[in-house]
Length: 146
Image (cartoon, rainbow, N blue to C red; front, side, top):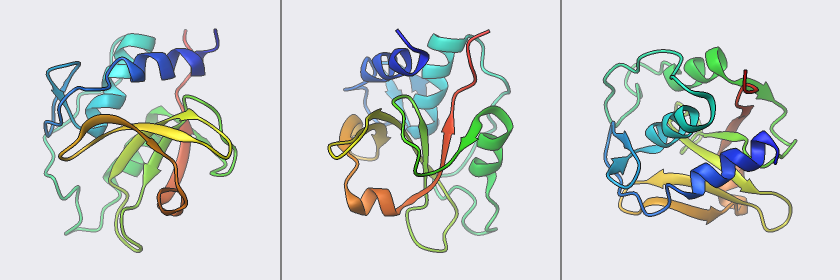
């Protein structure tokens, strides 16, 4: 089993976890960052840095790309068009806005899906439809297991 497959399997085990801002506990509550953190813990071990408290607006007032910067510190950047299962997707929900939503690519190709924690829905697997694809700001890969 590849690391990408393992990441997808672990992410799928979070499906059904309710949405809870700033949380990261399988079946109890998580947000999109908490999902990635939980998958990191299950696949790679201890998280690389503590996550400070954050608001739901993800630094929109300042325009600071805090989530993007953190992703580049700990994940490996990929070409946005080079898909692989287990990739981390960073979304810009509105044109010109800061990137503030995350998901994990589950399946690729014409019927691609991704797993994410979404307000009002919890952790779900969603079709990576054209409207979602247009919002992808960056694509990353988890580091290889040590």
